[in-house]
Image 1 (cartoon, rainbow, N blue to C red):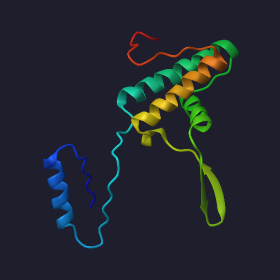
Image 2 (cartoon, helix red, strand yellow):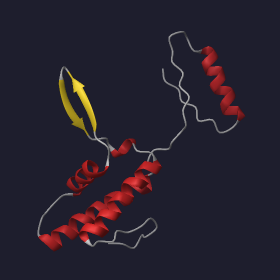
Image 3 (tube, helix red, strand yellow):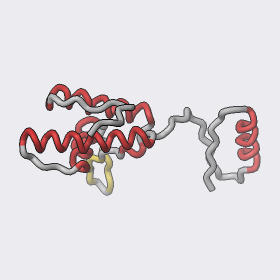
Image 4 (cartoon, helix red, strand yellow):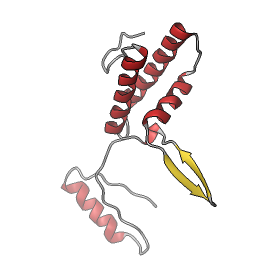
Length: 133
C-alpha cells in the first residue's frame, strides 16, 4: 500500500499524521519537498519543438530524423547519465524526461533552445506561441 500526501493545509497534515499512526510496523515514511512532474503543456511544446528541429535539419542538410530521434539526441546531450552496475557489468543509463519536475524540464528545454540558436541558427517557439507551425 502506498499513500502520498502533499501538505497544503492543516487538514491534509492531519490525514497524513493519522495515516502514519495507523500504518503497520514495517512501513516506511518519507518526507521530502514536493516537486510537480513536467506539465502537459511543457510536454506538448517539447514535442512540437522536436518536430520543428527535425524539419529544420531536413531542410538545411537533407538529413532525416524522427522527433523521437531528436528527443533521444538531446536527452543524451543534456541530461545526466547514470552508471548502473549489474553482475559486474556497467552500463550508461539516460534518464527519462517523464520523471523530470517542472523546473528540470524547463532547464532541459532551455538547453535545447541555446543549442538550436548557437548550432542550428534556429529560434524555437516559446510557451504561449500557439500559432507556430
